Length: 360
Image (cartoon, rainbow, N blue to C red; front, side, top):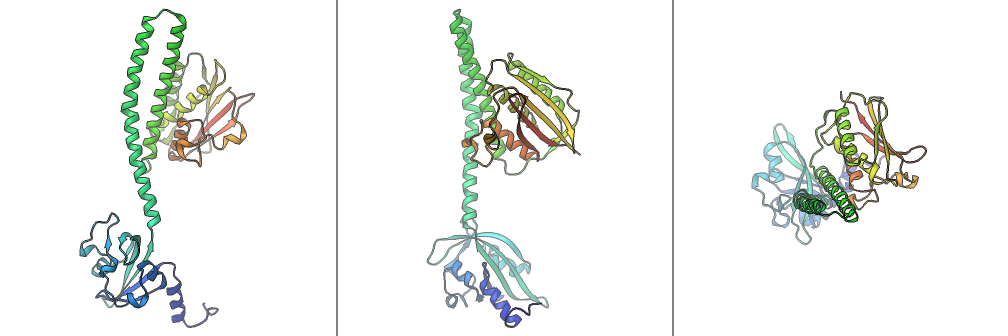
């Protein structure tokens, strides 16, 4: 099968061993290194002649857990494999080196067993320092977002309640129509800030999750009808209507499905260029999915902006999308394993379409 390769099988195995991009070392059951390849020399920061014959617990390459905590003797990868006579896979350690910076390595190892006795142990290891650094950066970012989440959830919203109290008190005391108009605008701005902080809180809860959410069968019709009622109440000058009926079906989602509809409906009104916007909602089943369309008669979205309207492929809150709300929508729909996109409305405006898989 390998007749086109030069040399014997032993020579071929030697070439594979030496050219492997992963460091490989072979040890006796007593822990003495008998062989290593070129990549192992690089990772251990020593020449092969200096490595061979050394023991696994040599001080030149001290192993700790990824955080730098010392290992018990029984936790050392060599001891684990030797004593259990079982392989390990992709275990991460921090490794001190004699003349270079410590690195994080992923180690896999297995015993060579003959008639119930361990004859040799083989370990393969690779440098995963870059991956470890990225993971640490993500953990740091998550902690910072959690702090920001608490600020948004408590401090800012508490201050907004105080502001609302002053605005409402002032509105009760003034009779000048111009001043009353200013106070009405202040109240509208207050509502907008509150909606932004709510969307920001929900977005941070989504992006800081360590695991994907567990999807459940969620009935769409009551959620959509409730969000429509709330948007109508908050925007009396807008016409918010349903075209046809909403199928009484369930989709795979979480309780945050309401946030998807709320943000899309609010977006259609907030970014309108007229005082009396019209928003039309329709829903239909197709190919095992529920499609919900939210159409407006606003200014529309240029074709060269449609692909980045949700901030896709860009850095979160610094994206060129229209705001936190749409970025939250894109993140939630991705977690629901659905899709969302924007189309042109006729004769003007945009249509946001949400596609969600029907619950089984």
